[in-house]
Length: 470
Image (cartoon, rainbow, N blue to C red):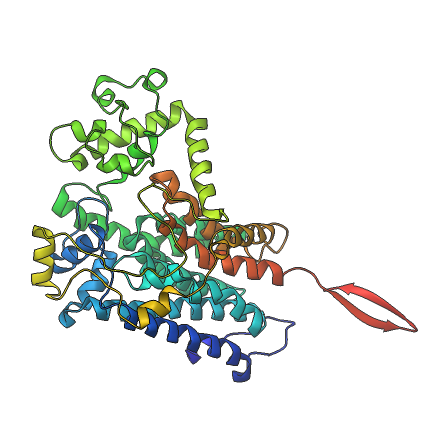
């Protein structure tokens, strides 16, 4: 950690980052590590989800790109740990990565001149929000994407002048994040645009774009070898079609006959993502696999958005607002959002894919259960929902305020946070889990914005005291 925390003090600021300056953060990090040890003791294995976790694990065993939703970036990480045949070990490594996200945030903020207490305060949601710790304990790709995005922000933001090497490194990190979760791919363009805004850093922006594009192009070529389609996944059209099912009116859209088969047919679900799997939805009534119609579904969705742009934006705004509620709102209704650690027993289905993953990755894969007495201790862990939801909205507003003006200290992390929040809603649907990647950059942006507020400085002038803006 010492090498990560070694930073350059900005001009005009005192060198306050001696080892003593890190003691508060080190103490908080120890407490956060203890919480994660408690989680490892409180549950008898990692949390696996049907069908996401098993798809990632199956791809890790076969090392070929999945044809539907998930790119193989996270599966490559699982492949590296496959020789240990333990999803519990995967969870342990991810808990360490979760602590690493906080270290990256702290290092970035200290490099921009924040005091130790201020930088530490910004990391608290990542370190102690049960939603983050549960994510670390699950076989899901989100935590890896968060780590890579925050690493890219550190590379770009720790010094005032971005070097070509830093731009290349950030582009590569963001490409890896995009190969972990495709929602992160456009962050490469946002980072390049940010470089251009910094007095026209065209060469640095070009380096970042090339470094980010090469891994994506290589992966798309690999995907084409297996699925005859140059792409990162085979589900973007299906996802966007599901998004339009909450507002599409074919009397307004007037699609051609081939696409008209995808019009709403009277099946009503309580969330856009539910249409992907609903047996009665128009897409799922067509013969064959739903993802075989990905291109057709994309064409219909784009036509629907062009014909009903205000309806589309209204759905995005309404669903995004669910991230900021004082109390958790289920979405879809079958989900129960919570800011606590769950207690109980969870099962997994017994089917061909589950049996194959057990045989090839970890024979001990099973449903998770709470272990006493640690499970009861975790269940009593307090973390109010408003700290997860409403406070997040306040942080975004603070970051937005720090993204305007001449200096714009918070612009890049705030842009990342805003995009990571809205993009999944625009492409498919709102999910409380999808909010989590936006929280660390939002915390960094808010901290930079508050730190960037000019402060009054007093100096003696005879018997009077005058203020000087810094």
